[in-house]
Image (cartoon, rainbow, N blue to C red; front, top):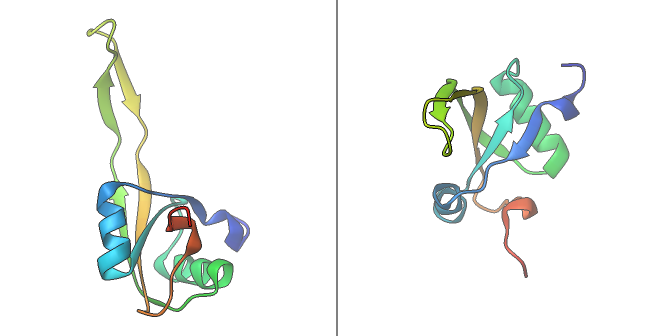
Length: 100
């Protein structure tokens, strides 16, 4: 990882993360595997101009799954690292907001 712009990979938007956004002011991102909590905090504050209160990091393991057509064929999905970022109550990230 060379720059702070390489830390965040993509936002994760699901029903659970929508609940976290609206009620708890928490946002979920997929991050680079070698990023730390302080690096994630600096990236969020720089890119979105918000105040980060807390960062929780979760390493999700790789999983095996099967193809629908041939149930014997096994596929391995790679694991990834995600960060749950808690913001101040007055701050929001517009990427997670719906169409206005």
